[in-house]
Length: 123
Image 1: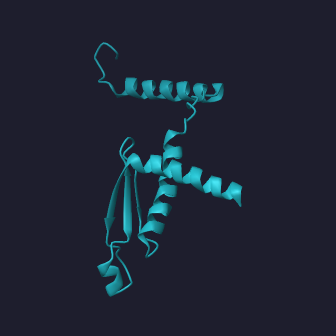
Image 2: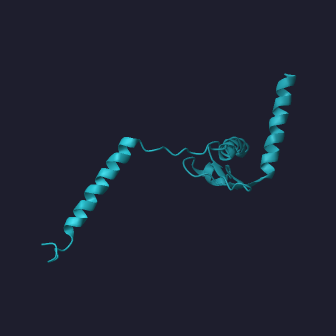
Image 3: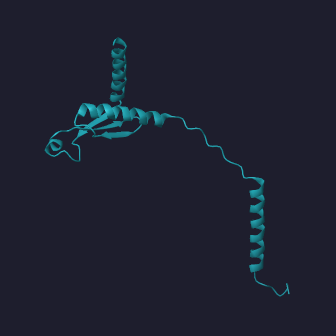
């Protein structure tokens, strides 16, 4: 039980640090729910200011639960955003493709030569 309590405290501290970097907006959730949905501000929108990433959650009728869900989603988004992408390697054309390109280029040049006007000197 003691280890679990410590784990919860650590995750709460990490969440607090993340919340300090965020702008938190609460709003009324849309969708079904009738009058209760229209009265409570249970939807939460978190905007991470350094990266500009935004998460909006309105799954639960509880604002605190929605904020916790939004924090988890935002953590995942930030991890994906900060993940370093490997540079793409350019692929080389095989020699057979190069030869085919040269042949089509030669054919095209012959066609263009045949299109020009016939001069009296050529006859």
